Structure formats: structure tokens, C-alpha cells
Length: 77
Image (cartoon, rainbow, N blue to C red):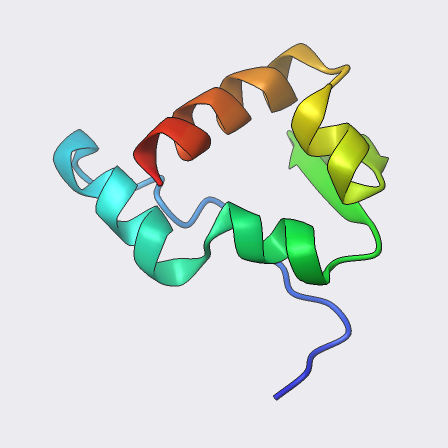
């Protein structure tokens, strides 16, 4: 499968904190998204909070919520 778009919406919202890192690792490696994507969009409260080329978004997120999310996911992965 080679989907053009892959969306994840609150995949960990109902999980216990102890399992969130494990689930994120199984569902989707952020490094994988970075490697195969032309563009990454980060949604917050139903709107695009930040979008751009993967290297820029992952290395220097401009949006505070994006920074918070990436700090948790990168440390969990």
C-alpha cells in the first residue's frame, strides 16, 4: 500500500498514559513520516496549526502545540 494521505486523529486520546508511547511506536514512527512525506500537516482543534516540509517541521516547529507534541512523541519513540 502506498497511500497518498494518511491521517491520525487523536489515536491516543482514550488510552492510559503508560501505553501512549507504545501505541505511537506501533502505529506510526515519526521518522517514517519524515522520510516518506513531501509535506506534513499538524492539526490542532480541527485546524491546521502548522504545515511544511518534514525537515523544517520536525527540526524547528513554529507552533507551540506542535513543539509539545513532537517533544513527547520523539522521546517516546
